[in-house]
Structures are given as structure tokens and as C-alpha cells.
Image 1 (cartoon, rainbow, N blue to C red):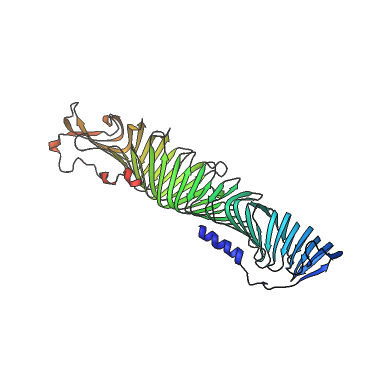
Image 2: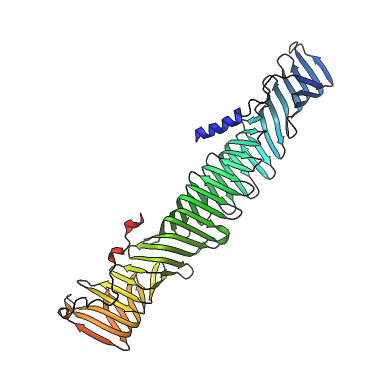
Length: 498
């Protein structure tokens, strides 16, 4: 970074050095009175009143001046004005000019005007050969509705570029820029950053260490770790584009999006945000973290869309697509697409969804989950609902039906209601754990009670069929309902989300 800044500075200092570097005569065009002041030397003229001097195409005006004909050095006093060319004028109260090197020093109320650009400072040097104006001790540049202040600065009037250094502050009607190093191309209305930079506006704050900002289109590019922040959300990435006018942002490489209101964080390699549409997308190695009071929910997917209120920035909906997986200590899940409606506290899982709750596996063509107080309140599996639970000793308890509603209490299954072609396989045990038999039942509906994470009671409704088999009388695979598939090896694990 330091080397790059040095290169930029060298361009300013040594640019265009071949232009007009030869020795030329200084012409005295006007003075109300002229004489020689022997106290200053025999070659020094004292010029008083409406002094006008010229070297090449540059004119020098002042109330009075001392001019050394031999050294081509002169001092100008009062109402100093250097007319550099048709567009550039410099004003001050005192001038020291070296005609040999074409180098000027200006003191007190110094003003440089170049078209719409105005530079104000107390001390400035101007090199005519390099077209370079320099202020070492604070200066202000104004251009139309823009105002930039820095401790040090350089201005090239031939290429219309300003180089600001140290404590740079830019003020515009809708935003403010604070930077360590900034280059302003006034012709193209481009600002280039070569150090820590912050852009403030009413809606958000943009930070970066390297990049550029187009003041007309209001498009910003920030690199070397950029941040876009408002009161509710935070986006961080190695590289970021942001357009204030359209509200569009694009973030690349090690992207982090934090929602401080909901204690949630997304990480991935690519993200886009459409601020005015209230939408944000993230993809590529996507991981999500939701920090709850009782636990942390980890999630993964190929792509996630967040929809938020454009006024309050509150997240309203979340959509996740392809290879969706989540993990919490008490519950895990997998599906191909997931939708979360914040207002309803409802999660909708689609395409081969599976839920694991400790030793229980739940599937259906679709799964709907209702969340209350950061815990699962109920779950609907439909159609083709299938619940499998490992027995405490051997085998699997099973519940199958067109639709099963699972009710939770204290993050544990309290009871289930099975509707439509309801079937169960239940390993019935005595109090000491000994197996009584394997119970097979069918009915139109069932209400299944749970106790100590195991089935404790089943109530059947309509068209009831029930058979209890001793284990020895079971035929091969008879204890499995049609469609049984235990997928323990597919259950997400905590280490999958690192």
C-alpha cells in the first residue's frame, strides 16, 4: 500500500516535467511607478501600483513588487493574482516567485480557482513546470456542492486531479466521506481511496481500505475488507460494490451478513442486495447461524434470499434453496427448499424434508413447523407422513398416515394426531422393559401420547384393526411398515457447519 501511494505521489510531482522547462524572460508590462532600491541591491527594482508581469503565457498581478533582474526572482505584495491560463487563477496576499525554476510560494488567504474547483489555504506552492499546487498545512477544496478538507494536498491543474493526504473529510449534500488518502479526478467526478475510508449517509455507512466512488452515479467500489452497515444489518466482504441511488450492493469473497435485531448471521462467498426492493441474496459455501437464548441454530443451503421491510429493515421472510440442512442440539433437519415467515413464526419445508428429534425421524412430502418463543410449538407432516422412533432396546416404533400433526412441549414431543389411513407399529414393553409383543394397528385416526420420549398410550378412531404379535412369530421384515427407511446416517452433525 505504501509503495502504491508513493507511485501516485510521484505521478503528481514529476508528471509533465518536460513542458516549458527552459529559461524564459520575465516581462514587466505595467507599474504606476518603478525605481531601483539600492538597499536591496543594484539589480532589484521596486514596482509600485497596478503591477503586471508576464513569463511565457502566465501573468502576475500585485499592488507592488520587488524584482531582481539578475536572478529572475520577485516578491509580490497585496492583491496577488497569478493568471496561469484561461481556466486557472491563483490569489493571495504575498507571493515569492523564482523565474528560473518557475516555482511560486503564496501566503495568506490563498485561493486557487480552476473552472468549478476552488482551493483555499494559508500557504501553497505552485510549480508551473509540473502544473502542481501543494499545500502542506490544511486546505479546502470546493467543487459545486462538494467540499473536501485535508491536512496535506496536491492539485494538478493540467489533468484536473486532486491528491488529498491525512485526515481527509469530504462533505456533500447527501453523504460524508472520511479517508486517510483520497484522489479526486474532477473531470470524471471519480474519487479513489488508498487508505481506510468511511462513507456516511442517512441510510447506512460504507467502510473500506481501497477503492473508488463515482460522485455522479453514486456507485462505490471498496476492496481489502469492506463493510456496509445500518442500525439493524451489517454486510462485510473482501470486495464490495454499492450504488446509493439504486440501493444495490454486491459483495464477493468471505461475505458476512449480520442481523443484530434477530441475532442471526449468514456467511458465504457471494451476496447481492436490492435495498429498494427489500431483498438480499447469498450463495456459495453458505452457512447461517441463529443465536437463541437456549441454543444456537446452524444451517446450510446453496442459496438464501432474505426479504426485509424497506423502512424498518426488519427481516420478514427467508427462502433457502437446494441442499438445505440445519442443526440444533435438540433438532436437526434436511430438505431441498425452506421458507420462513417471520410474522407467522412458521417454517415450511419442501421436497424430501426430514426432521430428526433425538431418536425420532419424521418425514412427509411437506413439513410445516410453527415456532413459539424460540421453540417448536407444533409440526405438520403431509401427505405421506412417516414417523420412526428407535425403541429403547430393539426395533422401531412407527407412525404412518396421510397427515400427522406433532405437538411439542418443552422442546420434546408431547403427543401426535394421525389422520387418514393411520397405521402404527409399536413395541409394547412391560415396566421392567421386557417385550410383551409388537403391536400392529390401523384406523382412520389416532391420538398418540408420549411419555419419557416413548409412546405411552394410543387412542384409535373408526375402522380399528389391531394385532399383537409375539416377537418370535414375526415374519422377516414384517415389523416395518411399507415405505420404512431409517436415515440416521443422513442426520446433520455440528461439525458439518464449521
